[in-house]
Image 1 (cartoon, helix red, strand yellow):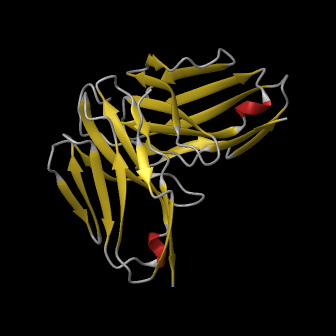
Image 2 (spheres, one colour):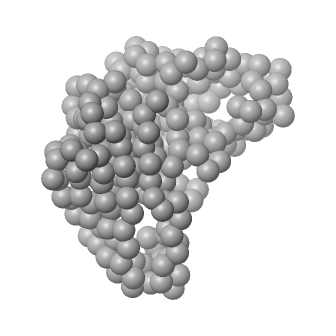
Length: 111
Length: 117
Protein backbone atom coordinates (compact mmCIF):
# COMPACT_ATOMS: atom_id res chain seq x y z
CA UNK A 1 0.00 0.00 0.00
CA UNK A 2 1.44 3.36 -1.03
CA UNK A 3 1.21 6.12 1.54
CA UNK A 4 0.45 9.59 0.15
CA UNK A 5 -0.12 12.08 2.95
CA UNK A 6 -1.38 15.64 2.70
CA UNK A 7 -1.36 18.32 5.34
CA UNK A 8 -3.18 20.15 6.65
CA UNK A 9 -6.51 18.35 6.13
CA UNK A 10 -8.33 21.69 6.06
CA UNK A 11 -7.41 25.34 6.06
CA UNK A 12 -9.41 28.56 6.52
CA UNK A 13 -7.76 31.76 5.25
CA UNK A 14 -8.85 35.32 4.60
CA UNK A 15 -9.05 36.73 1.09
CA UNK A 16 -5.64 38.07 0.12
CA UNK A 17 -3.67 35.69 2.36
CA UNK A 18 -1.02 33.48 0.81
CA UNK A 19 -1.00 29.84 1.81
CA UNK A 20 0.71 26.54 1.14
CA UNK A 21 0.05 22.83 1.61
CA UNK A 22 2.26 19.75 1.69
CA UNK A 23 2.10 16.39 -0.04
CA UNK A 24 4.47 13.59 1.03
CA UNK A 25 4.93 10.39 -0.95
CA UNK A 26 7.28 7.39 -1.20
CA UNK A 27 10.61 8.42 -2.74
CA UNK A 28 11.19 5.10 -4.57
CA UNK A 29 9.87 4.07 -8.03
CA UNK A 30 8.81 7.63 -8.73
CA UNK A 31 7.19 8.44 -12.09
CA UNK A 32 5.17 11.62 -11.51
CA UNK A 33 3.40 13.75 -8.93
CA UNK A 34 0.04 15.30 -9.81
CA UNK A 35 -1.91 18.13 -8.21
CA UNK A 36 -5.68 18.36 -8.79
CA UNK A 37 -8.21 21.00 -7.77
CA UNK A 38 -11.69 19.70 -6.88
CA UNK A 39 -14.54 22.13 -6.40
CA UNK A 40 -17.73 20.85 -4.81
CA UNK A 41 -20.13 19.23 -7.30
CA UNK A 42 -17.56 19.48 -10.12
CA UNK A 43 -14.87 17.22 -11.58
CA UNK A 44 -11.34 17.14 -10.24
CA UNK A 45 -9.21 19.26 -12.58
CA UNK A 46 -5.48 18.81 -13.13
CA UNK A 47 -3.29 21.72 -12.01
CA UNK A 48 0.20 20.30 -12.46
CA UNK A 49 2.00 17.13 -13.47
CA UNK A 50 5.58 17.12 -12.17
CA UNK A 51 8.16 14.54 -13.12
CA UNK A 52 11.64 15.88 -12.34
CA UNK A 53 13.33 16.48 -9.01
CA UNK A 54 13.52 20.24 -8.44
CA UNK A 55 10.61 20.94 -10.82
CA UNK A 56 8.75 24.17 -10.20
CA UNK A 57 5.50 24.85 -12.02
CA UNK A 58 3.28 27.93 -12.01
CA UNK A 59 -0.27 28.66 -13.17
CA UNK A 60 -1.40 32.19 -12.36
CA UNK A 61 -1.27 32.62 -8.57
CA UNK A 62 -0.72 28.92 -7.94
CA UNK A 63 2.69 27.26 -8.00
CA UNK A 64 4.16 23.93 -6.96
CA UNK A 65 7.59 22.50 -6.18
CA UNK A 66 8.83 18.92 -6.17
CA UNK A 67 11.53 17.08 -4.20
CA UNK A 68 11.63 13.44 -5.30
CA UNK A 69 14.70 12.54 -3.19
CA UNK A 70 12.95 13.33 0.09
CA UNK A 71 9.42 12.62 -1.20
CA UNK A 72 7.50 15.87 -0.86
CA UNK A 73 5.78 18.54 -2.92
CA UNK A 74 4.46 21.95 -1.88
CA UNK A 75 1.54 23.80 -3.44
CA UNK A 76 1.48 27.58 -2.95
CA UNK A 77 -1.40 29.97 -3.52
CA UNK A 78 -0.53 33.67 -3.55
CA UNK A 79 -3.22 36.19 -2.60
CA UNK A 80 -6.03 33.66 -2.07
CA UNK A 81 -9.43 34.49 -3.53
CA UNK A 82 -12.85 33.02 -2.61
CA UNK A 83 -12.90 31.19 -5.94
CA UNK A 84 -9.78 29.28 -4.82
CA UNK A 85 -11.97 27.48 -2.26
CA UNK A 86 -11.75 23.80 -3.16
CA UNK A 87 -10.13 20.54 -2.14
CA UNK A 88 -6.57 20.20 -3.44
CA UNK A 89 -5.51 16.61 -4.08
CA UNK A 90 -2.04 15.35 -4.78
CA UNK A 91 -1.48 11.98 -6.44
CA UNK A 92 1.62 9.86 -6.87
CA UNK A 93 2.24 7.83 -10.02
CA UNK A 94 4.62 4.95 -9.52
CA UNK A 95 6.16 2.25 -11.67
CA UNK A 96 3.16 0.01 -10.98
CA UNK A 97 1.03 2.17 -13.29
CA UNK A 98 -1.30 3.33 -10.51
CA UNK A 99 -2.17 6.88 -9.53
CA UNK A 100 -2.55 6.91 -5.74
CA UNK A 101 -4.25 9.91 -4.15
CA UNK A 102 -3.66 11.66 -0.86
CA UNK A 103 -6.57 12.61 1.37
CA UNK A 104 -6.64 16.21 0.13
CA UNK A 105 -6.44 19.64 1.72
CA UNK A 106 -9.76 21.45 1.91
CA UNK A 107 -9.20 25.19 1.48
CA UNK A 108 -11.85 27.74 2.42
CA UNK A 109 -11.16 31.40 1.58
CA UNK A 110 -13.33 33.93 3.41
CA UNK A 111 -14.13 37.20 1.63
CA UNK B 1 -14.26 18.59 -26.18
CA UNK B 2 -12.29 17.97 -22.97
CA UNK B 3 -15.12 16.42 -21.02
CA UNK B 4 -15.59 13.08 -19.39
CA UNK B 5 -19.32 12.47 -19.02
CA UNK B 6 -20.71 10.15 -16.39
CA UNK B 7 -24.30 8.96 -16.09
CA UNK B 8 -26.30 8.80 -13.99
CA UNK B 9 -25.22 11.52 -11.53
CA UNK B 10 -27.13 9.83 -8.70
CA UNK B 11 -28.25 6.23 -8.28
CA UNK B 12 -30.14 4.49 -5.51
CA UNK B 13 -30.33 0.71 -5.72
CA UNK B 14 -31.32 -2.24 -3.60
CA UNK B 15 -29.00 -5.10 -2.79
CA UNK B 16 -30.70 -7.39 -5.33
CA UNK B 17 -30.69 -4.90 -8.22
CA UNK B 18 -28.50 -4.91 -11.30
CA UNK B 19 -27.48 -1.48 -12.58
CA UNK B 20 -24.73 0.04 -14.73
CA UNK B 21 -22.68 3.20 -14.53
CA UNK B 22 -21.59 4.76 -17.79
CA UNK B 23 -18.61 6.91 -18.71
CA UNK B 24 -17.86 8.51 -22.08
CA UNK B 25 -15.01 10.61 -23.49
CA UNK B 26 -14.33 11.85 -27.02
CA UNK B 27 -10.76 13.07 -26.57
CA UNK B 28 -9.22 10.02 -28.23
CA UNK B 29 -7.81 8.85 -24.89
CA UNK B 30 -6.75 5.22 -24.76
CA UNK B 31 -6.56 4.81 -20.97
CA UNK B 32 -9.68 4.87 -18.78
CA UNK B 33 -10.08 4.41 -15.04
CA UNK B 34 -12.68 3.74 -12.37
CA UNK B 35 -12.10 5.20 -8.91
CA UNK B 36 -14.22 4.82 -5.78
CA UNK B 37 -14.37 7.54 -3.16
CA UNK B 38 -15.92 7.16 0.28
CA UNK B 39 -16.72 10.32 2.24
CA UNK B 40 -13.61 12.10 3.60
CA UNK B 41 -11.28 9.49 2.06
CA UNK B 42 -9.04 9.74 -1.01
CA UNK B 43 -10.24 8.29 -4.33
CA UNK B 44 -9.18 4.62 -4.55
CA UNK B 45 -8.32 3.00 -7.86
CA UNK B 46 -10.56 0.10 -8.91
CA UNK B 47 -9.77 -0.65 -12.56
CA UNK B 48 -7.53 0.59 -15.38
CA UNK B 49 -8.20 -0.05 -19.06
CA UNK B 50 -5.47 0.53 -21.59
CA UNK B 51 -6.37 0.24 -25.30
CA UNK B 52 -9.71 -1.34 -24.31
CA UNK B 53 -7.97 -4.12 -22.35
CA UNK B 54 -8.18 -4.45 -18.59
CA UNK B 55 -4.67 -3.81 -17.31
CA UNK B 56 -5.24 -3.33 -13.58
CA UNK B 57 -7.88 -4.78 -11.26
CA UNK B 58 -7.18 -3.69 -7.72
CA UNK B 59 -8.67 -6.79 -6.04
CA UNK B 60 -12.18 -5.48 -6.57
CA UNK B 61 -15.05 -7.86 -5.61
CA UNK B 62 -16.75 -9.59 -8.54
CA UNK B 63 -20.01 -7.78 -7.82
CA UNK B 64 -18.32 -4.92 -9.72
CA UNK B 65 -17.80 -5.82 -13.38
CA UNK B 66 -16.09 -3.35 -15.71
CA UNK B 67 -16.54 -3.30 -19.46
CA UNK B 68 -14.87 -1.23 -22.17
CA UNK B 69 -16.89 -1.78 -25.37
CA UNK B 70 -14.84 0.73 -27.37
CA UNK B 71 -12.19 3.39 -26.85
CA UNK B 72 -14.75 6.07 -25.91
CA UNK B 73 -16.92 4.14 -23.47
CA UNK B 74 -16.38 2.59 -20.07
CA UNK B 75 -19.11 0.86 -18.10
CA UNK B 76 -19.25 -0.45 -14.56
CA UNK B 77 -21.88 -3.16 -14.07
CA UNK B 78 -23.18 -3.53 -10.52
CA UNK B 79 -24.88 -6.61 -9.10
CA UNK B 80 -25.72 -7.71 -5.56
CA UNK B 81 -24.00 -4.73 -3.97
CA UNK B 82 -23.75 -4.18 -0.23
CA UNK B 83 -24.60 -0.98 1.70
CA UNK B 84 -20.86 -0.44 2.30
CA UNK B 85 -20.45 -0.04 -1.48
CA UNK B 86 -22.27 3.30 -1.24
CA UNK B 87 -19.77 5.88 -2.49
CA UNK B 88 -18.93 8.34 -5.25
CA UNK B 89 -17.71 6.48 -8.35
CA UNK B 90 -15.38 8.54 -10.51
CA UNK B 91 -14.38 7.80 -14.07
CA UNK B 92 -11.23 9.29 -15.58
CA UNK B 93 -9.26 9.09 -18.81
CA UNK B 94 -5.79 9.95 -20.04
CA UNK B 95 -4.09 9.94 -23.44
CA UNK B 96 -2.13 6.82 -22.48
CA UNK B 97 -1.11 5.29 -19.16
CA UNK B 98 1.95 6.37 -17.15
CA UNK B 99 3.89 3.36 -18.47
CA UNK B 100 3.79 4.96 -21.93
CA UNK B 101 4.21 8.61 -20.93
CA UNK B 102 5.05 9.87 -17.46
CA UNK B 103 3.61 13.37 -17.90
CA UNK B 104 0.01 12.28 -18.57
CA UNK B 105 -2.72 13.99 -16.54
CA UNK B 106 -6.12 12.51 -15.86
CA UNK B 107 -9.39 14.06 -16.96
CA UNK B 108 -12.21 13.24 -14.55
CA UNK B 109 -15.95 13.04 -14.77
CA UNK B 110 -18.05 14.54 -11.99
CA UNK B 111 -18.95 11.11 -10.67
CA UNK B 112 -21.97 8.98 -9.87
CA UNK B 113 -23.14 9.17 -6.25
CA UNK B 114 -24.31 5.64 -5.47
CA UNK B 115 -26.47 4.66 -2.50
CA UNK B 116 -27.12 0.98 -1.80
CA UNK B 117 -30.09 0.31 0.46
